[in-house]
Image (cartoon, rainbow, N blue to C red; front, side, top):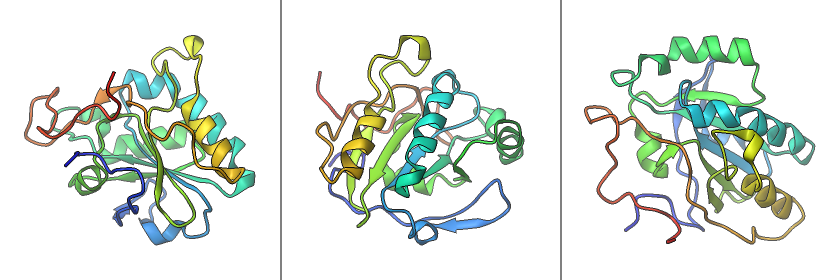
Amino acid sequence: MSFTLPIGALAPDFTLPATDGKSYTLSSFDSSAPLVIFFTCNHCPYVIGSDEITRETAIKYQKNGVKFVGINSNSILINAGDSFKKMIERMQEQKFPWTYLRDEAQIAAVAYGALRTPHFFVFDKDRKLVYTGRGVDSPRDASKVTVNDLDRALAELVSGVAPSTPQTNPIGCNVKWEGQDAHWMPADACDLVLK
């Protein structure tokens, strides 16, 4: 069985604190038609390099009722810059158009099978997974982006068709797992798309 949630699977529930001082569950986003849940962090150069494209995509689809939810599951023992306090500071500085959740116990990361930061999961109105993988093909250097897979998946979804490319391999730093080496990946974690 693959580590990462398969296409067609239902979104796992969660109860996580956010940088806005509230706590959220999956049902907190019931008003969203499609829902984008993505695993992210504060320090990864692939996240930082693509944050503005993610922001543009989130704003672009707000009119379609799409909400974005970022989840930071990284262990602060590996990178202290991913602390909840630093998350709050980053949101205050950047004012990103998404809810930013802290997954301290890494329960959501395991439930979704997050591989890297960033790693996107797009769910339809019934909360079935219709796209998972990268946001863009060059997240570390936005000037070299030629493909925006997340935008394409959302454009197709809001127009009433299933994403034509439901899976891509996420590109970024691996999730920083508690008690493991900084570059450790779960044994059953693998590429979503064979090259």
